[in-house]
Image (cartoon, rainbow, N blue to C red; front, top):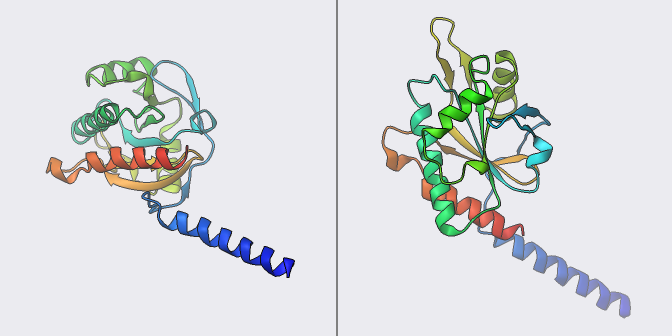
Length: 202
């Protein structure tokens, strides 16, 4: 009899836990695991996947000589941060991988970021310190985002996605980081998703 009661209690406990998970406001759309990396940011600091773990981060690909989508993507990311600041959200990182690492040295990236008047520069990590081939392979293999050097110009072809990475280094959502119509960039949704994810994983 005691074993039956214990079994019933365990069953109800499991059902309760599963029910709570099913009611989560945060819904993951992806499960792409980022491999370990170690690069240098715009402040000359070494940033690794391990150092980012424990907090979610929102990532993107940019380069400083970009004449097309990078400036609006950077502005849109700054707006996401403004929304997070208004919500009082603090526990996150912003990570931008340069797709033109030969040009984008740390001081060049720092100068680039200074043009966007971001609310909190300390949360931004603009990464460099690897080869062009490395970032092309890293992007396609690990984030399913195209990065391709254009041999006929000084431009680099790359995707416009923002990707949300959880505290364990797994991509869980992707969003338009750039669109001709600004309303198609889900700035409010991105900020809300980050807030919801943090609230549910405290």
